[in-house]
Length: 68
Image (tube, rainbow, N blue to C red):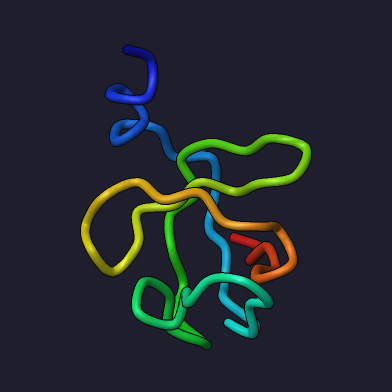
């Protein structure tokens, strides 16, 4: 399974700008102002290692990319 190798990926760093979800509660898994390591990206989602320590996929609207 390809997603099992994502823990080793490092595609950059993203910062959470809000957790105002319309449908789901994301504030348990993401903290506003915190930075997370991006492990994969699609057109609509960014996959990060979240507060649970696992890979989670979230809409791109929650993040802004951090320049390194």
